[in-house]
Length: 136
Image (tube, rainbow, N blue to C red; front, side, top):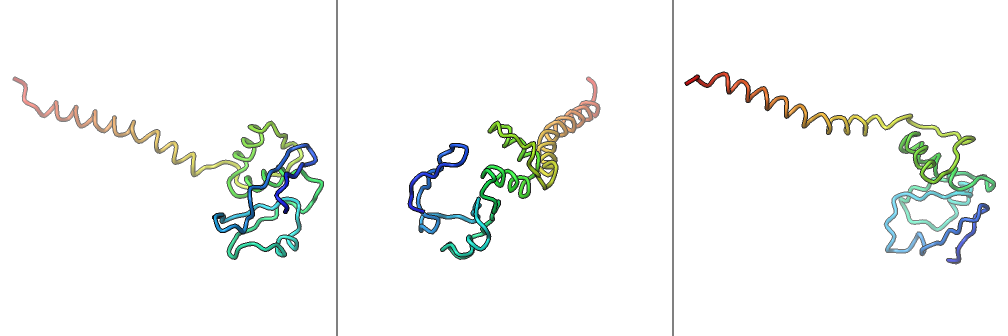
């Protein structure tokens, strides 16, 4: 890598910002599009860096592998949302992974329901307290 911009088949310019092996880089995972596992293993990468080969097919667009990785590591709904936000078609793309982020959905529901439950419990305690007070 010589540091010059790389132009994709669809005209997107990818501009590298330094070397992956630079000491100021703190990476825990590297996604490598367009290379085979053998090519990635031959690269001088830091020890302990988790590398994922997105697609060894040079004809595939880099977003395909990125979206497939998002679906695999997060969920399919998020991958579809990312593609939609970039106006990128996922029609012919195989997205394998969890269908929906149920854990996040359950957390959001719990966060939304908790104040309502606290309010209901507080009103019941207030009503009980009012019933116990003697009428003057």
